[in-house]
Length: 190
Image (tube, rainbow, N blue to C red):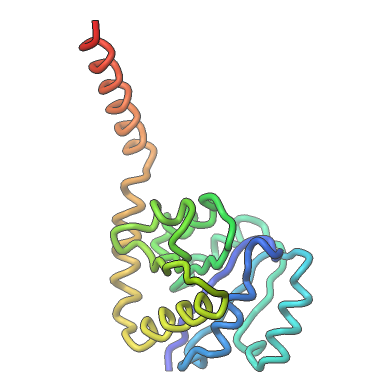
């Protein structure tokens, strides 16, 4: 059976909450279809590696530690899904890297991800009222994706389409329009 490559990139600390993703993976129905690349290191790396081993998912994960940007980009290029389960995040650079390569992101629907991952360019998971509910929402999203693998391509296509709206040329047009509108409003008040 085909393997779907998931990627997590970032510092392995409490703020990134990779533990939510790891706990979800323990409950995913078709976990044998998944391979997870975790890029980065941090104070919780050993704790999360032990969790993976203790819960029988360490065979699904390759822990890469810190990689040069070029190597991380290569990892993205072979990925089907980028995962961010941060509980406190702005709008991480990894989303833009993933989008530029057509890799959709699964994330909680908050912070910068709420606005960036629109129009099918990712999977936005509503923030639940409890930790366990958040984990189960991630489980449900991944199970649904693995049960409907054609969605990987639909998500990738939507991600590329969405990324095209964030090119430098498109951003320049947006800023020009904002300035033009501000000038019009200013002039209309005189």
